[in-house]
Image 1 (cartoon, rainbow, N blue to C red):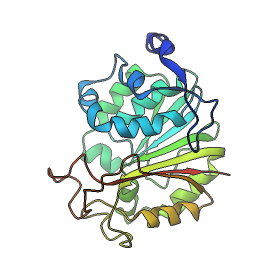
Image 2: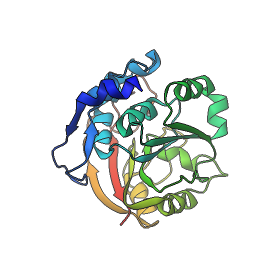
Image 3: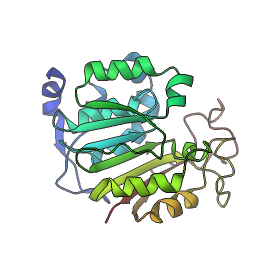
Length: 247
């Protein structure tokens, strides 16, 4: 495909960082964002999302099998599609209620019309699509708190299923809006935040090991009291950036 050929020269060898294999050949956030088939509703978000993508994309390499959990309209999915290349695969998962309520079916159709390595899955969060080979990467971008807002979803079951369907050495990467420390799940369906320690305990109890707790998305000026969609704080919330690994 022309997309991947045009980006081939943008491949680089990343410098070693915590939790990332030094030999991983990756695509930079800038190169992935330069793909010509990305829709305007994605590119207009690049400035706000670039720090998160610069944190995420070094963990992906050509040929990886990836799950974008709670992908929404696929902003991250297309960038990861570029990163894994023609030999990789990206599973784009959303619950049916999101597809319907947020009217994202056209966005999902657009992605599959442009990218042969994208597979759309409509399923509850705890019904993990089983790939032909185990996942190398699972990404939950700003949505882990949402897995607690559907009474029909069991987050413990989800984490256990993710662990089962991930290869040894694979990464489960979570970014999310921080709630005040010690508040557990109190704010998941009000201000749309979650306590970081609650996330860590839930994921590690499934067998994952926390290998990086990064401040890459930190905004200490956020007192974590406002709804994340409040114009005063939107795009500038204090966010966790956690990397878990299956031993």
